[in-house]
Image 1 (cartoon, rainbow, N blue to C red):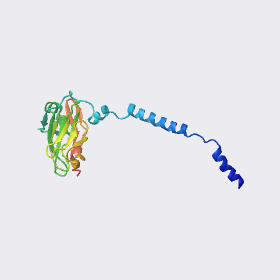
Image 2 (cartoon, rainbow, N blue to C red):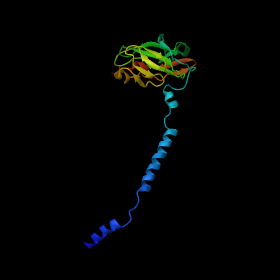
Image 3 (tube, rainbow, N blue to C red):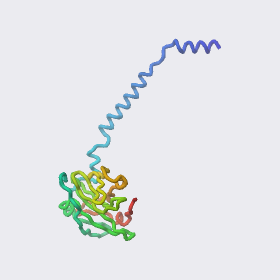
Image 4 (tube, rainbow, N blue to C red):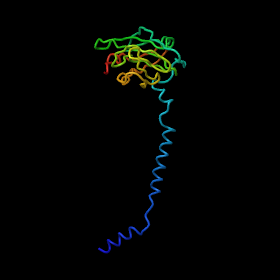
Length: 193
């Protein structure tokens, strides 16, 4: 029993090991991780690759509101095809294709300010708006006025319910100045909300 008392006494009289080196080590590792994240983590330039590499000249929509131009696409070999020049000249175009449930799927193609291409749905859900406009740095639903960033469809303002369902990218391919998307993507498209 006296040994236990002695150990307790030693506990208070013996010098304590400092926790400072451990704390400094943790802070150092955290600092290195933060620096590496900012050096090699996601950047604004990478977020602009949401729609792939540029296919047209850069442009500005600042001070403008550009409505969709309706076009008729070609369907051949399981692909929906539209000329890149038509989209490039009009900035934003619309067209419709019937899905495998006989519902007309509203589609659009547009060139972003950085010259990238979006081709995909133009259904704003749940307001069911079918057309969009380009205005400044935003994509605007013509029905509920919900806005998204042009480059990556991040919700900016408007109806939060619609903001949760931005237009769906259908991964276009550009070959020989012709934009194509897989017909199956449209045939299998469904309203999400």
